[in-house]
Image (cartoon, rainbow, N blue to C red; front, side, top):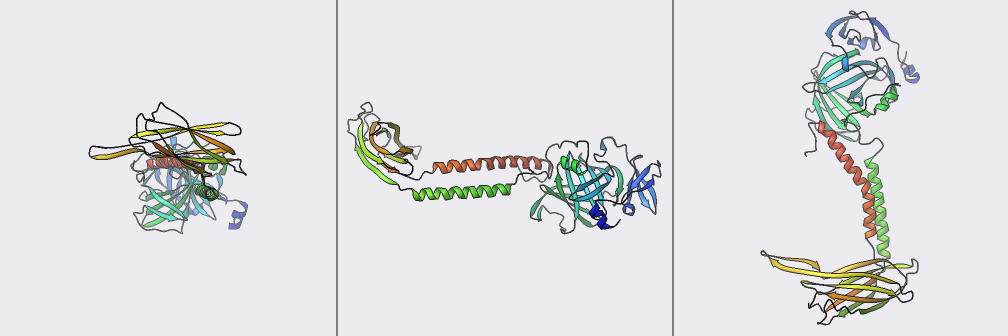
Length: 434
C-alpha cells in the first residue's frame, strides 16, 4: 500500500503474524522490521528480534492490574490521523510509587505517536523536530507561543509490556523531564547522549473513547492532571478582552455623564444659631426655596453639603424638602462631628467638619427647604452652612457596575488559582510556596 492510499482511505497495512517461540500463540506485527522488541500477551515474555528470530529477554509477571484499557491492534483517529495501537507498556517511576499506562501508536505515513494515561488523565504525544535545547537545567521556555514550566524529572521502570516496540525496551537509563503549559506538555528524553522532544496534548476520556470507537467507559480522572486545562471551553484571554472592552465602554459613558453635568449651585446659605441654643430646643429654620426644571428627564440629582466649625463636639440637621404644589415631603438627616486631642506623645483626630449627601432623583418642581438643627448641649457651635448643587456627576453607579463586571472574572481567577495550586501539589517545582 502506498502513502496516499493510507492518507486518503484511512487504511493501514495488513498485519504479519508469527508464532511465539515459547507458547506458540500467534503474535501479530504491524511495524514489521521496525520492531526491535516484541512482547507476547499470552506467555508475558519479552523477545528481541534477531535475524527473523525472537530471543527471550525477560519474563513479565501476570498482567493483574496492568491490563490495557485500550486493546492492541485497535485503530483510532487522533489529530486527523488514523493510528493503530501496536504496543502497550505499564511504567513505574523509579524510586516513587507512580504508575501509568502508555500505548504505542503507529501510522505508516506519520510514524509513531504515544497515548499516555495516568489516573484517568490522557495525553497524546508526538515527536517534534522544530525545537532543540541542550540545557540540562531548564526551568521554563517558550514554544509555539506557550510558556512551558518544569513540572517533573524522573526515570522509568517497565513493569509489563505487550506488542511491538521500535526502541530498546530493556534500556532504562533514559532521563525524562516534563514541562507543562496546559493543555500541552513537552517531554524531553535524554538517552545515549541523544535528546528527544515530544509534544503532548491533554485529552478528555470521552475524546479517547470516541477516537477509538470504544463501547466501554474509561476510568474517571482522579485529581488534577499535570496538563489538564482549567476549562476546555473557557479562555482567560477572551475574558480579558471582554472585561477591557466593557471597562472602556463604562469609562466612556461616565466621561459623557461628567462632561454633560451642569453642576448648578441652587443655594449657598449660612445659618446662625443663638448661643443659648440647646439640643432640646428644636426650632425649625426656614431654608431657601429652590426650583428644579429638568426638561428631558423629569428628575434631577441634588448634592447637599453641610459645614459647621465643630471642634470636639457635633452638629446635626434634619432637612425636609416640601413640594410647594403637591406638598409631598422628602426627609433626610445630615450631621458633622470632629474630635481631636493629644495622647501618649502623639496627636490624634477623627471625624470632619463637612459632609455631603446626594439625592439621586428628585422630581421637577419648586421646593421649600426646612432645616431642623440640633447640637450637643451648651456647645459653642453657633453657625453652619448648607450648599445645594443640582446635576452633579454621579460616580456610585459607575463603581457599582464596574464591580459587577469584575465579579465573574474575579471568581474565575480564584477558581483558576486554586485549580493551579492543586495541580502543582504533585510537583517538586511548584511556584506556590504556601
